[in-house]
Image (cartoon, rainbow, N blue to C red):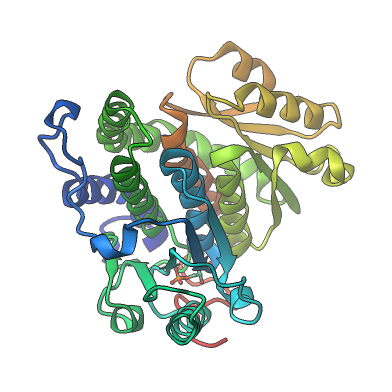
Length: 379
Ligand code: M6R
């Protein structure tokens, strides 16, 4: 039931701190510290899947594809494993050449998405038939429904522990998928010794703070975002920009807005704006920039300023109490400062709320948007 929330989507947005807490409990050793010289990860992953990996390929659709892009960043930057992310619907008909020592990960919250299942089945088959693959097919599913078709197809599954999600727009299952990728990347980083024990401990400690920080974002911002949504309920186009690990969050913010409010929205890597999309900007096209402190913070701010120079209204998902952010953005959706690698878990929340409140303001059926189904079981 909706437990006092107007829509399931809003309830599910609010469930996210609890979901992340449950994932941390399920996947990480609570009493772990770096001096114990063991992995912080308790999530069971068959050692045969991870040994001597040279490459990871991920197949998914929609929001699960966005989570996979964050996953790629983590697997490459934390564990040093080259990772490619494919739309399942594309992978099926043009799979990349076979490489040995490859882990294929299928990400689907429902475990029922036809394209994702077909891509994984095809991969399993071509790998077991090909001498070039050189090893047994290694396939891993990340899903919120281990009892699903995906669960029956693959012997190895990570259960994302988000509880059933009713709103068609994926929210809490996205956060849970992110947690699965963090933990997988940490386990691989531990096994391959790509991080110092001190850095590993820093990340694990910061992860444990995420649920409280998510609660803070929810408590401090909902009212303001609801008011802001009134200003934009008649807007026709939105642009979302981000870089690095927050580029997929720009895509996710745009997808959330499109699917429930029917407003045209595009997500771009901020550095690409000047290669074409900037021509779209004027005072009628607001730009939402995700500017999390870290390696690309100043770059994103300067990309946002370029948009402002074209009269775009600027909304920033940016750090709290930061003079540069306050000066740059017309409207600020502040998030606590965290390790850049963990920032997507926080930056996505204001974007979910913005999409939700714009759609609710427009009087739309937020939980069951037109033309969409919760699981896409046809090609
Ligand atoms: O169940 P899945 O994760 O495989 O679903 C994939 C997409 O259909 C899904 O994420 C879709 O894009 C959502 N409605 C996004 O909110």
